[in-house]
Image: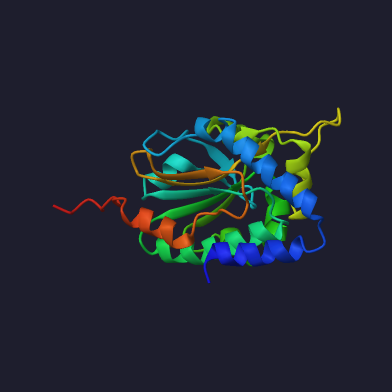
Length: 228
């Protein structure tokens, strides 16, 4: 069963009692965001990605460039660690990360929640244990996501659908929704350029883990300097 198959099965269970009209409005809201140009404005394949340093759940600062000095890096941006769809996706990615870690690659799961909250919701996941080159990093306020061009402000129907799928969209003090990141997966070579990029709005359309593994395998890994 593919990750997409598992996501569809889980979403169907979550939305089993949701009126068909609400489902149609959610699908329409997803399409409207995709057609608005927001997705096209994000960092694309072949472009330099912004460098960043963010905290993991232990309070340690992890820098992208420091990881790239050791090998290629996959970056996956998720919406909410409490969402069953996000947990399912990150579990699949964590298993793949343990495989790619043996190849000298690192894998970052990047969210806008406080790191301790995400760690609690993902307890036992390799991204929390930092096993096999997997890292869980927090981008409070979405500043780094903004540098990637991934932020957008969701409308009512998108918020309603996300909530049904376990994603509670943050609301500002004025009662208006705060920006959310788009769903994204990147593979970044040691030169800092994205060799793979998939960006979208639909939480059911996540990059298959093996597609990320294949992209990482195509990236060269720095070799230790030979002793003279």
